[in-house]
Image (cartoon, rainbow, N blue to C red; front, side, top):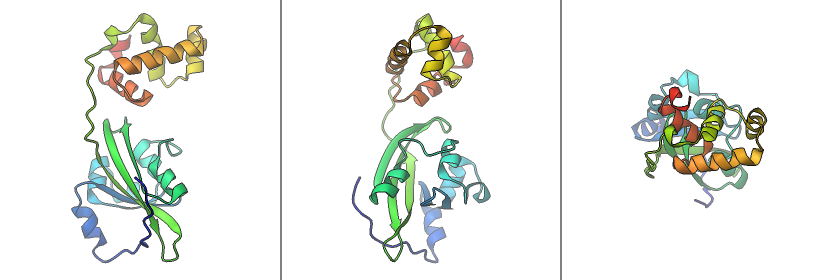
Length: 198
């Protein structure tokens, strides 16, 4: 999505009622990634109260990370001043999210944050029917280390193979499991149980 949203941000008396009536996750984030407003759906979805969300950085609350993810639509909105949209798999929640981000400007036209509208993505995630039993022993060993958070170089050193070999098997496993990212691959494997890759 693109296009400048030039309307200044003004919070009216019915703001809270409007937010809470929305059946999707609604939140307002400032230019420093801090969450300053959320609706009831957002809090219910994340099982968090206002005190656990307001004032905290969005990537800490949603992704459990210390910095924004590479695909962050809020980062792009702050950089370009235009509307952004992103669909991604969030392993902490176990679902794909579709997030639309609209930049917010003050009365002088300064970009001060963005409005986020998020919902579960309708894009079907293909079920390959593949289990870890369909992997080679080499792939199982690599996958086990990936699930432990090891990097390609670390895996290569431990298994005494080249980083290129690790990357090749990683791509092959993502293809087998119809995973669109490493996080999605790990999440799918972990749903089968840790014993499945022993």
